[in-house]
Image (cartoon, rainbow, N blue to C red; front, side):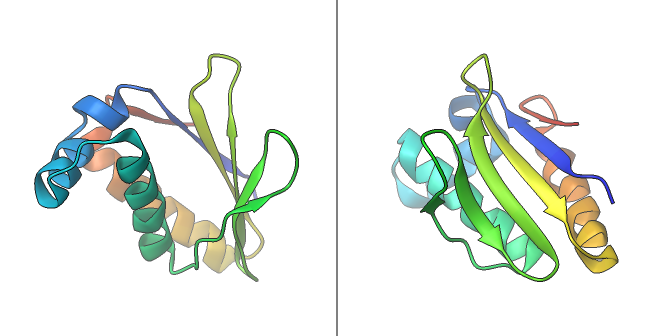
Length: 113
């Protein structure tokens, strides 16, 4: 099982269809709100509870269950990165489905490696 790394370009929080949808729904276009809503959207898609547990100065544990672990950090260019580490084949399949759904409308702003 191979981990997937999602890199979010900074423009995601301003220009992406997702950011525009959240800003319109909440009447708030703040970076923090869009970031928070996006993490919870990921949680919903993957059926995991989102937690914010600081592992060290640069890494945050976002979710950890029997199927997967999700870790957040910044890359060398200061972009947000979210690592999806599957623990089971169910976790791996859930991550793949989430990846496909997120890329449908936001592929210009998100990269999966």
